[in-house]
Structure formats: C-alpha cells, structure tokens
Amino acid sequence: MATADNDKLGFDFDAYKPAEIAARVETAGVAKTRLDAGRTILLGILAGAFIGFGALFYTLVVSDSGLGAGPTRMLGGLAFSLGLLLVVVAGAELFTGNSLIVMAWADRKVSTARLARNWGLVYFGNLIGAVGTAVLVVLSGILDTGAVGATAARIAETKLALGPGEAFFRGILCNVLVCLAVWLGFAARSVTDKFFAVAFPIAAFVAVGFEHSVANMYVLPVAMIGGWIEPDIAGLLWNLVFVTAGNIVGGGALVAGVYWAIYLRKG
Image (cartoon, rainbow, N blue to C red; front, side, top):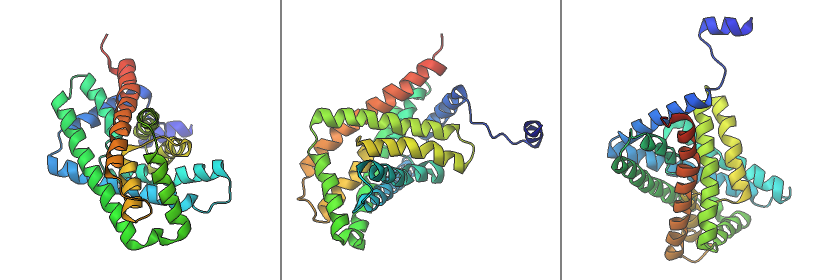
C-alpha cells in the first residue's frame, strides 16, 4: 500500500537498475566530452582539490592511531571517500571516474579524439588542483605536528618505492573500485544513497593499498613541498605514468568495457 501511495506521489526510492545505470553513464559520458575546454579544466581543478582534501583527511585519521592496522586503514579509507563524494555530489571532473566514458566511445557516440581531449584536459586540471591543494596545506601548517608529518612522509616513500609492475597492477585494481563507486553513484536517487554507494568501494581501495593517480598528485607533492622527503620529480612522474596506465585499464576496460558488452552492445 505504501509503495502504491509513493508511486502516486511521484516518489521512487528504488535504485536505478543496472541497464538504466549503463544508459545514464553513457549519456553523462557524451555530455562530458561536449563541455568546453575552460569549464572542463576548472571542473578538473575542483576534482583534484577534492581528492586532495580526502587524502589530507586520511593522513590525519591514520596518524597516531592505536586501533590496529586494519581498523585504522578502514577508518582512513572512509575519510578519504570524502574526495569522491564531493566530486559526485558537488560536481567535478575526475580523470579516474571519466574512464567510464569508454562506454560511450565503445558505442560510437564519442570519438577517440573527443575521449582523448576530455582525459587530457581533466588530467591537467586534476594535477593543478591536487598540487595547488598540497601547497595550501603546507602553508597552513596543518601537517607540522610530528605524527602527521611522519605519516605524510611514510605514505609518499611507500608509493615512490613501488616498482612499475606493482604501480600498474595496483592502479588497475584501484580504478576498478573507483569506477564501481561512480557506477553505484549513478544508481542512487539521493545524496544519502550516494554516500553509502561511494564510501565503501573507496574505503576498500584505500585500506588495501591500491594506487590512484590523482591522489598521488597530492600525496607525493605535499611530502616533497613540506620537506618531509627529498624532492624527487623523476620518481613522481615515474609513479604517475604506471599508475595512470593501470587506472585506464581498470576503469576503461574492466568496468566500462565489461558493462558496455553486457548492457549496451548491439547483437
């Protein structure tokens, strides 16, 4: 009876079905590639800043925790999910999430040139936003306490020590979860729904230790700019190359490609 009453009033509390999500993701992908360059870069800058805020929150939460490694990393992962929640709800363009545009590309509704243009502009904007946030965080003095600064250094050193294969495969696994979080966000009908849809996949990738290219655009520069580790631009770029490649494969092939084949492929 309650369901019938809700239908009469125009309310629908059920999540969108997977086939509906696929159509919504494809439509959004087409719209993203049609944005002008200026707006795309600005939205990319916002996303880089938002992910930086999530990474900062994570750093603070896991510093000096006495809860043990598992619970601490889980709580830190939930804190980091702030970044993608801001992207999804407030509106921004995130390179890793935009791997889902591959669905529209595979359906020939977006050209290769349009896809590459979007990824390039968004990646550039994400880099500006993440590094800019790192500079502001260092200038704010928030990380000057011993425990927090030491955590920032440890995170950066761990990432820089990864080999190419480790960075690449952790990048794949990371963006599978990130794109699934975005996918679930498209299933949601309210901000509350989006929070629960986004939080747990993101908490999982952070807690396990997978690699997110845009997060690394913040966590590596903030440790270098703040003086907690020696500047290593070559190491930073080397990390980003392999993590970014992994992110593209994870999100573009293993999420967007698979769901396109299931729900949108003709024949």
